[in-house]
Length: 324
Image 1 (cartoon, rainbow, N blue to C red):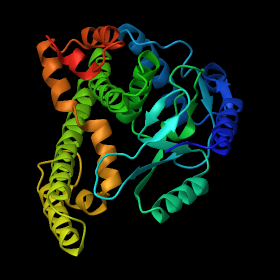
Image 2 (cartoon, rainbow, N blue to C red):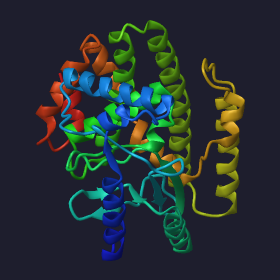
Image 3 (tube, rainbow, N blue to C red):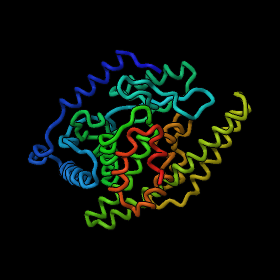
């Protein structure tokens, strides 16, 4: 789906607002009025930047400033799927090509977009995003919602976004997001290990394993729904089968052996409509294959990141990365 000039104006205004809110982290740390929690998180950000440089990521001046920002998100993102599919319908951007999502700085505007898409017969998933990145084109600040995350997740998000600043291939959104997710996760564990914080590294590993177990079940459910749509025509009967499949998937999630989260509560709040399943596929569908490659590299994250340079011109960057 194409985008209007009005949408680009909205994004430009939001980006300008975010950039105007920036303050150098050094000045925020020097301010005696800065709350202790923000001070500690900003010190963590600076440590993660140095760690990212050691990994071989392009850091530049990313996350050297802080922006106060209200609420729990910087943008609200919308994903849509057409009837009978669990793949994103997508949106066409001038510089980035086709992307599965569309972001809005204005939450109400995102909701209006979602309602418009639903009126056109599409399935829609809306979700808040605490981090916003210009993919290294500008010196992005740490926005206040990012600091409200637990430390482990904050480290993961920063590394995820710095992967995008290092490599972002036009027209390969699934590859871009999935490899950034994997490196962000594994990098967050390695960060705490290298910082001589074994307990936090262990906790981070447990959190990641839980997330991957949950995503595995969501991907399994997505595959079941996709197979259903391919085998049956639209109608009440198909809807009832899908509902049964969803109930089974939620039951499987409730029975997962999770170490850091309550699976029963989680299963009841997960959004499992077609568009949300499509989003899970974008971020998580290849993590198992990346883990196999990572194992072959003896857990060398620097080596994995270095291999990204070799796939920038590949027709299929995923298969090129996984080769050999």
